[in-house]
Amino acid sequence: MQPAMTNTGKSTAPAATTGLVPFVVALFFVWGFATVLNDTLIPKLKALFALNYTEVMLTQFCFFIGYFLFSVPAGRMLERLGYMRTIVIGLCVMAAGCLMFSPAAMIGVYPVFLAALFVVAAGITILQVAANPFIAVLGPEETSHSRLNLAQAFNSLGTFVGPWVGASLLLSHQFVAPDPRSLSASALSAIRIREAQSIQFLFVTIAAVLAVLALVFWGKRRAAAAMGQENPAKAAPVWRVVLEHPRLALGVVSIFVYVGAEVSIGSIMTNYLMQASVLGVAAVTAGHLVSLYWG
Image (tube, rainbow, N blue to C red):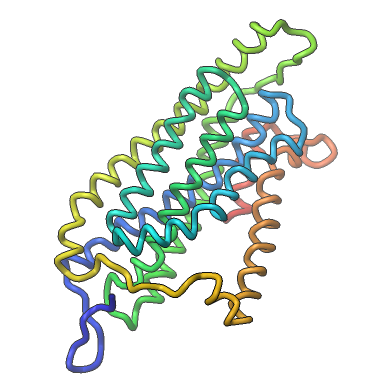
């Protein structure tokens, strides 16, 4: 639904609706922050479970496959439930994924971490599908692109801050990877569970922040509905739209390739910078440098 139009031809938006802008911008920051935590999680998991690069990059595979699987269902959800309820669901799903890091840390099993990341990605996908068009309608139509760019700037700020915080909390102490060949199964499990506690703390904290945001959006859902900003317009089937516009189809392919390169570089950078032949720095220092890459 488009904002109301004035007699000058310019659209307007009620103050109660535009007051949602800071909270929607906060969503962009949060999912940017959470997404790049994988870059510091990867070296931690690689050492903890003695993984090779193919195995540890399953973290990114399980994370980003969630975008592919949940984007279309999220669009259908948005059409049925509206912006606010969809955002609340996305926040709750993302929080549930963060809370799954607790049992993953308690049992110290790598596939459970992958399952948690998959659920987190499902929540982020739902948020992205809802928040991107929502920020566009929260104010005058002629400035919708400015609001979207502002929100994306805060998303980039989240990707800049995330690796620094993640490195400080996950890689802050020198951790020697356990050798499965020299330890008993029980001793190896105990080490993995102990070291996984730092991962648990970080993601449980994020879950608490997400829960607060979910309560905020749930409390404001009636105001958005009353101002006519709750339900998006019906969309044509996504695949038909893409195929009918070659530039859009090529844009999809371009973004796919670009994001694949961007994410892969950030994911491996910590371990790369730690190599003696490169910089030979400690894990926490390498993790902090990843922030400069994203910045």
